[in-house]
Length: 153
Length: 297
Image (cartoon, rainbow over all chains, first blue to last red):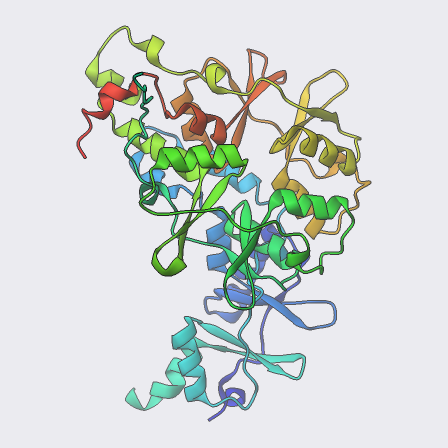
């Protein structure tokens, strides 16, 4: 069994120049359309090359204040107001500014057990499938999971 | 002759109590674009640059990248072309006071913390030192945030106000100033941000180093007007506010400075930065030495 057998060939992508606000909307739209939760998307440039990945985690990392540990110690504060101001500062930020640029990819012929090994060792939940320079699909950890364990149910 | 050792709330504390166990690093051959991505993504002010043998070779700060922007370098230029080095280091068991003195005397905003066998274990920055001060002063029994219950009268005078700690010079530019001019102003005054004002001297926005490197990443021209990339509006604080209140705002909003006014919110009179707070060695008041001994370890 190879990547091509379990990859999803319908996938949503982002452009590096899109705003983070648009990316958040795109996550919501993609999750609705796919009827499954989309936690990360591939970022593709004008030449259709994969230039990065943007996950919900990346966006959360960005909006979380660096000293968020202090928030738990402060009871007497209208926290919502402070966070709104933080969100305002997300507006000029683009996908390329905070996306992950070191992307691990696999080929259509990568074996499923190699994929499982990669996901475990690198803590990755989705892997773009690249043929030459073209993105042809994406393997999600859930698809891999059900494929490998389908005999158990 | 007796030598007087000035003591502060940080006396006796060690680097390892304030350092952050995260070192954002990139290889020397990585591009400026990638460097900016990492600075913005991880919200740090500098990157450690590693050579081919995985040894620290230098540092690239936001200031260095703004210099590259000003010089018109393309963003695919390798970071090694703009790095400064070698990185200044300290050790986890160094006294925090001596590390801070070293930062000030060398004019840097961070030190890289090195463990045994020269392995990097973290970074020490002003921001993290002030966060420690703030937590420390909050835990103090004399903390103003506990005043309601302690009902100890008459000690307002000991509380530091923003005015006492802030820097009262602020550099401002009109909205139609070119980014190149803004960069010249920032560099000449070694400020982290400049104010953008209307012709009548009313604040309209702020341009920080982060705004400038983001503009560089987005391919904005040096001739672009300041107003197009500024962060607006300016949320300014009254200079009579207590230092601890202002610090709390800075941590909650994740900003490194607050602009200050003297009654009229659009007339800016100064700026309070986290490094100002690090300089006074306090998160709230001036009488912190006695209270230090009252805080349970």
